[in-house]
Image (cartoon, rainbow, N blue to C red):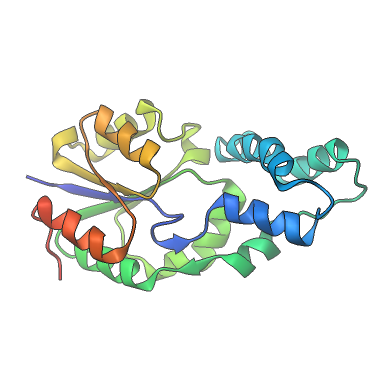
Length: 201
């Protein structure tokens, strides 16, 4: 019996991935830098932010120093607001699921990104609990973050379903025994949830 349904945020409920932000940086801030070099340097730093170990000013300083740019503004919030859009059909689905099941969010996200989410799109969402990597100092797909959520929610792995757009995170959840759904689009999500007898609509 399913007791808990867990949703990722970026790429599932909100159309935003940090790779999109890197593309934005290349086009609007550092066009002279090869986009692959930009991604190789910045993505590990963003992961540190998602662990709660780096701030936006520190990120900007490190990127400016590495790419020899003075007073670099990385458009951290501006870029987010330009790119991120709610996936209203998936949000409506989650809200419907929340009427029948206990629900939670589990996201690899930095403090600053989550602040923007809470001020905006998360106001559209009804869930019982939100778990973030920066608060827990753990990230998907490591097993500890899934195990932490299961313990906090007092459910067994087989009693939980997890939805994520990143296959590595889906596999990470499955490794600890959670039933997992690889999100690709709304219709397929409906089909996959039905396999676990989750039919909120």
